[in-house]
Length: 238
Image (cartoon, rainbow, N blue to C red):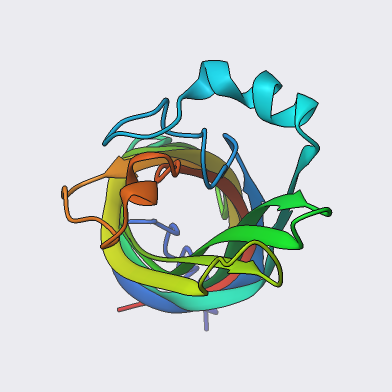
């Protein structure tokens, strides 16, 4: 009796990983304030009446001094997007919403008068819509990104003096800034559905509306904002 040949085992190839699909996730990071001066009197070049940039030196000669500082902090948010993979090239679009902790403050003082004028600008939120293009090394994706962002900006001007008959004056305003957001990063798919990423974003935003503080000093404050974000995130691909 002749024995039949053994049946060869069937080998099923594992599915090839793809970045194509809808995803959503969260992120956490740090924002860094930078950019132009936020000068209460001279930053806007003298628009709206009053003093201009050329008068700064004259005020210094009268005993006025100027200082500026900026502060960043921990920020976080969420994102949603879609990728489409063509060979090793990955094209995508992403939208995100962030809570920011950016602030920028400038002060002008005159000690003999006991005068202190302060402008503080705070950015509390940012939303962006960006395109992405990347190159996939299997589960590792290296990408660049560029798009448009809108941030909420709050400004407060305060003038105080304990001599010379000056009154305390405080003016506030809230406005929105918009402009270019660019960056890049790397993302790694831990599983077919879960990925982790590290990303850097640079934003340069300008005023979107013309509303101003109910004070002539609104013409002098720099209302634009330039800042950076470094963040880590996690995405779930559906």
